[in-house]
Length: 72
Image: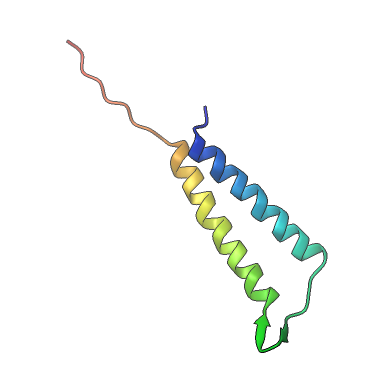
């Protein structure tokens, strides 16, 4: 069963996947306007890094768990 944090992480993962898919289907060139640069390649790399970190958190949240018990 998922708790609120796991659900939020999975939703974030889904959102990032959608953005990555959009960038790979319709790549955009990097550009500069009014002195501000937009690098889509850097944005893509940041999304991939974020995805990896969130995936690690999801896997940590799912376990494995060790349950210790003592008999009486």
